[in-house]
Length: 388
Image (cartoon, rainbow, N blue to C red; front, side, top):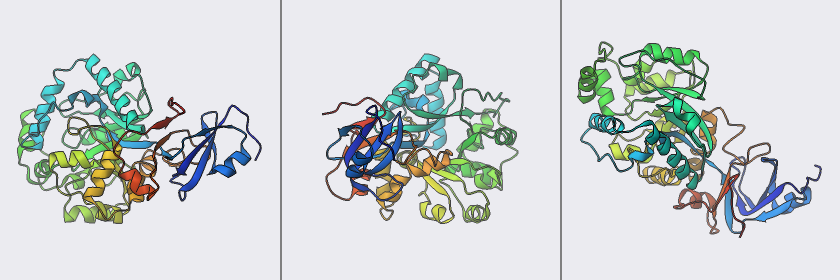
């Protein structure tokens, strides 16, 4: 390999966690023109690349984290909605809170959300937005996959693809079968909320309950309710969807999922899940069926902050038998795959972008240290940093 010019940089750390092979002790990454061109031990990299050296010292260098499901529109609602008696009461509460917000409030909310996620080491987000027309006003601070959140419970919607990476029909109770079909025809990335709450199950299976009553009250046609679970209603799909939540599942649902030829991507949001008190997430059964499990933060209307490290810690508490390495994959390689970026994001490898973060290394098990980290990364790349 030819020597590189002095315009590049050799980034050295105590450990480099590539997620593309075993961790590299005394590792280094060679960077040229905002791309990673080589990865190896520090001795190997400095022998192959005559770049300026940036030594991070006793740090673990790892890929930037990927938030597979968030609603940064609602960053400003942190702490504004007390825990409600039901999921439907929460929907009423958030609708009332949103009615008080102006477009400039959403712009500020999005900007604050990006800044906070960045401080916690997130470098890519799958963000659902109800206001895609505001995207040009956002001071984007990371790699963003915008999903236009769509609702047609009482009226048709016009789908404008110009500003978004994907589409997000909100949920089966707010988006019609026609809207889901139209979204599948676009070829865009697709995500939706599915089987999130017990009340959604009661609405579709039993044609009763608080959510059924609320949706009927606001004018939804309820003729599709009764005798079918949300997963059964979602049915067979020709596309790979990113399914947020998938909390409430029956034995019949698992039989249907086992027969599915499409192995969907599933996003679990541990702290939002705890906030609502949903049924236990069926991680082991979903993974055994071949589904790609990712983690997300959901919105700050049901969470405390936008830290994916906190989500990993919460997941580990919920599933202590899952290895820390597998948990880290849920915020790196797994969401990269869900977003169609498995060869580009979520790992440190040649030709990948410089989406890197570093946290202190104490010399213990590297994956345990990462999953247990409770703070802010000391370095982030390609964002500005200070060499000390």
